[in-house]
Image (cartoon, rainbow, N blue to C red; front, side, top):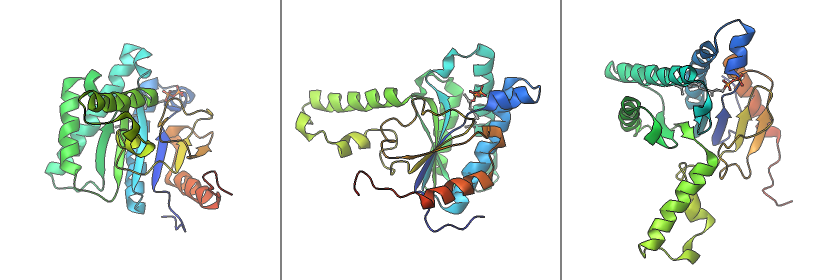
Length: 239
Ligand code: FPP
């Protein structure tokens, strides 16, 4: 395990490059997602071993429904298998080291997955050291609209005055409202953009890009991210 002088409190990760990883090996794209899910579990576990407060993984965007139905179904199967396995381990008293939450609009997901999600969230709710957020049917703009609607409802009900809406209050109505903003956002696989991920929360995040494809991402890569983070001088607009 790496040793560090500063740890980011919150890390965001865009799990990209699964399809290309599979193609490189002459496999179908869904094999890339399966490997990506293994890496997700390992990196989530590593973050909890390091004692990082929060890590948010981008697993499925509001735009990903445009993929072929077979691929969407395969990704849903991967979520289902992951949740089933957590449930099985929990009943065998094998401790999962972190609290898990799903963020995004769950209403479009298959009902059995939604209920597995709720069970898993409740079971892990008291593990406070590390929170692992999985963003599913998530979009940063959609999240901002969701927060705006909640505030508008409060205002319409007479419970909130427009001038009481501050950045802090708005932030509390995002899906990560009780967590610090991400210090670093990691995007592997060579793309240099945020793709609607943590749009509100990323205002001051350090961005870390790399050509490694997500299924090849290792604990040593995360160590490198944290070492690079240690060296960056964060000024938040000051001098
Ligand atoms: C992007 O790579 C990846 C996805 C759209 C799916 C990510 C999902 C997982 C890794 C499964 C996560 C599992 C759990 C349990 C949270 P891409 O397919 O766009 O890759 P490409 O750009 O190379 O085609």
